[in-house]
Amino acid sequence: MITEEQKPLSASESIVLIPQLKQLFLPLGHEVGVLTHNILSPLCKTCGITLQQFYLLSELKGNPGMTISQMCSRSGVLLANFSVIFRKLERQNLVIKQRNAKDRRSSSLFLTPDGEALLDEIDAEWGHQMDSLLSRANPKELACVLEGLKTLKVLLERAR
Image (cartoon, rainbow, N blue to C red):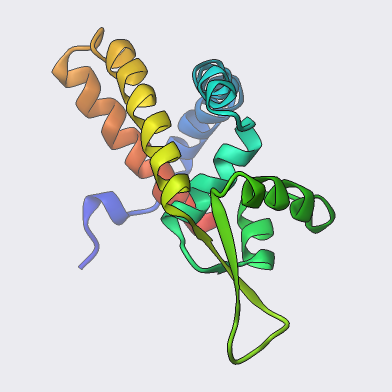
């Protein structure tokens, strides 16, 4: 049985909703990106890493043991640039690379305890900044934003 939420949009609903969504998506995505950059970039700089390095560390925290090619694919970092970025993180003792015992050509990537601690530090400050921003909304607004973000996440995952 198909629920109301699973039914595809009718042609008239598509004609009205899709253009509105497309009109909002790019500018809103840009604003979220700028807000995220403005909060995270100074935090990363204080911790001695770049925003790009932060994103790589975050990917590893969520997906420990990824291979280099998986990391490049998920992060959008070119393979040619990855080794330079990763070596800097290794020198700071934030990540380690372990050779695959079954296939010596392959390596798995992991955060070190120092890398975990650094991410926890940045995450705590990020949480504080987001609390400050989101505390301006009422509970109904927060619930609507949360539901919308969850839905957007599902749509983006389907597109992968």
